[in-house]
Image (cartoon, rainbow, N blue to C red; front, side, top):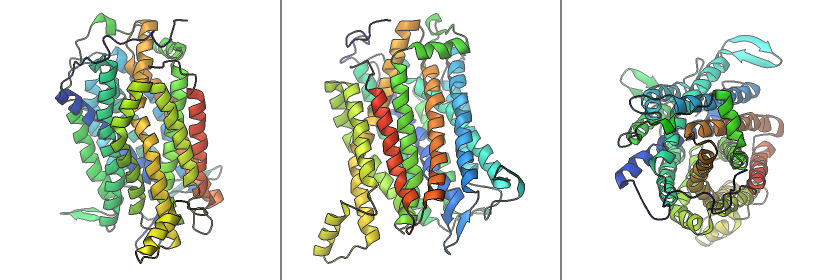
Length: 490
């Protein structure tokens, strides 16, 4: 086995050199807004939209059953996971006039935008739709089949566009510090996209609760309005990302000689990959559990406006943005591994505090005390909301670390693979990461509806909602534990 000590992996003149203009860094990083924007909408609100949305007159709409939602969330992520390494392998091997990566972004984006919109237009907007048959207790209905098709289409197309986009990063610059800087810019775009999918979406859900009419075209609810506007913005972001970027000319060093099966095996021979991909999968699953549970936490447990769920998410991402320069500085000074481990265990602690939101809202009490001195009385719901707000503000540090460091760590993994195989296989590594982390994300769709169904998702029976942050914390702890042996310290 090759040496992987601290000094064994060095990018060429990695300390202070640069090869990118600000415009190249900025426009490429702008695409990260699209990477986070539409998934933020789907990850945060799809379960709530299909299994528990409340109409203005107080009626709760179940477009599919809890089991159907679980499978409608899980199956597409497994299909996407299979697509990930296939897309990665093809992107590494195929070469077009525009390059290996850019054509996937250019031609896949319109179809991805389409599916990010139509998923909010189920055939039966008021019920489950026509029942085709019952399979082992699962009602296979019109809406379930539609959810399965559109959700699968969205994630497969997301893979076909995003994996090649992200695979451009290691080719843009060989310098370690510049990669961290580009990743920092991408993290800012990530924050903007996530904020638009949380704060922006929360505002739109409140503002367009009754839908929107554009001429003769009518949108029945705020989710359809949000899907349309975010889909358009989503497309703009991706096309800006490839506006300035030009791939390096193809040469024989880029020609990957592995067959697909060989490429999969060689990926797992890289000793840096298992620790990284386990942590990545844990982050994906844990975050998606929290995102899916957030609307239930605010609307059902606290009895507050659905739009405030977006405010809680916005606190995290906006707080994280302020900390990006600090995280970059800490990573350059102490190494990415140490700071990444700190972020994971910090995340675990904050999620355990979030689980106390109803029965012991520790941070809500002093907020209520200050409000009382100012002549305001906070109800129990607002005390809980204050606790959640402060807790998630603390979580921003951990989220900032994940935003900034996850991509440079994967780039180090890919660099080491080049030392082992002599090939640059960026897309294959993104694909293999997806093969493992996407099913993990799908499990979040499976967990949350069943927690709500069997443990309760109301103010009177809230244990399903309160269990979500505990489950997420346990998952992230597993990620922290498995990342500890990661060997690259730089």
